[in-house]
Length: 154
Image 1 (cartoon, rainbow, N blue to C red):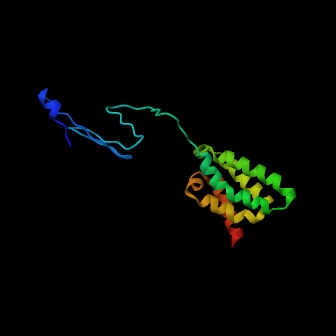
Image 2: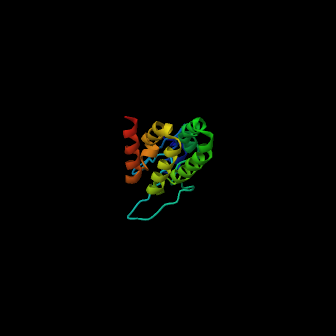
């Protein structure tokens, strides 16, 4: 609701508004409302905009949630294979953390190596990469390995 009391005495129009929670307010002729974290650059401009901390990968919290089933599977593997399996999982997790910049062939090799050590984890690996987060970074080599693994599930 416009607050015209003070501005009217000066010959102009004044607006005020309150937003509770996330959202946007646009007031007046030509105003544009943008969502949280958005940046509007008018005119004919190009280039990068740095809005603060940038992340191109996957958060540590997301990684922990995604990889916890693999760590559970490792506990069920033979003791002599557990240390190597953990190394494969940590290497895969580090690569996955890069998000879109993850090396496809590296991920594929890590998956193959892990499944060779813990064959019972095939279903868990396939399920992990069926998630939108990991499925979005899987490229041809990783997809090929995952398809081979799916075939072993029947």
